[in-house]
Image (cartoon, one colour):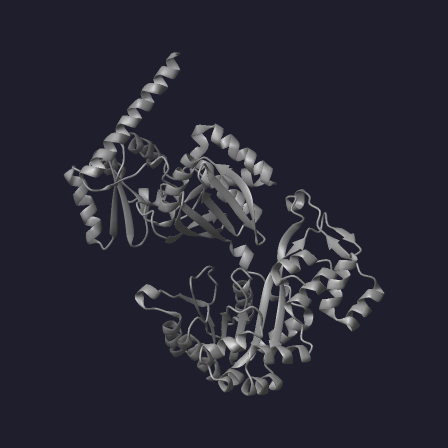
Length: 550
């Protein structure tokens, strides 16, 4: 064994001994032990105490918000540290104290001395070096390249604490909406949801997952010692001049805690109405309806169908210095400039119904209610739409026609529905075929039968005379060999005109509303999807995936 190897072994032994000592002190003083090698220190928190105080008493702040402070200290028996903590507690802070090792303290002290000389992307809770993020965004163009780089990080033990940063950078680069960490018996499965579908990226050793999990819990404010129940939190990533919010959900599973990160990138949500995928006639109808001073507009569809994006686009279209727009959401996912937003908090009694009841007294012109879930919210929303407010909200129904019987189930009188409801939208998201590699082909006989079934004999005949070509996915570097890149909405709209008003008052059952919808030859979700197939935007497989088999 050479001198260097011996020296490293001695250092490792000394470090392990110091970590054991920190764990012992934490247990003795009934505090939490923290491994600072996996904890992302907030540089802003380090400024809280002067350098000489930090060095003398071996205490410093590792996390700071307007109301909370986390302190790390080496020896809880030092009386002066208790005085420092008590001073901040008396100032109104909620305090949490951790015990750390002398080795960890010495390493953090170096960062404390460096201060803000290093140029980094910084958030309230996580920091990623700007050069690191941009470098790996440029390097990772496919899942295989991501796997290779993660492999290289695992091979270099000093890089393992940066794997979370690499996972986040890759997710942002791929345009992932969610990152799934799923512990299995022998390893951790890492999957990204891209354009609505989940893709396996990598399998990590469970010991690495334990490091990442601790880091995520600290970042998002989850309780480190709670493993047997669900927890929710969030943190931010600073990227150039904007922040990307990350929502964290943790639930217990057979082999440990599963975690899902929802990436809330403002660039993905703040789009114009014209970019959502509405057909020209539908967009014209929508704009005409939302410009009315009052009425109830409902958007229906499952979670992940793009309803929030559509409503945010509507609010951005409508916002004006002369209008007061208020939203009540659960939770607020994106901040909208020029719009007042509030978030429900059921644990404190601030529900959708309670919030809506209060907001009506704030003299709004337009109100967005995140979701109508109960009878009280439905009643207040319909009443507000009848008293001079434009109210936007969502319902979980399979199609637009299903909104009517759902409101009846919530004990809204058919006559009130007919008077208050202006427009119902149903929507889904389908993947766009990659423009660079997709191939134009003649449909098979089976595909022609499906197109004919959806369009009807007369419309199909007109289209067939012009010649029918559809796009098929292939796969290239541009789309990361998926064949698809990006998503677009398919929509079903029906205006509550006099015919529908009379029908709702007469018979508000689903079948009666659907029959009138078909009689008026209104465009269904599936039909809008097929029309986008014929325009070379998406594929029949995609339409069937989100709408059901044709």
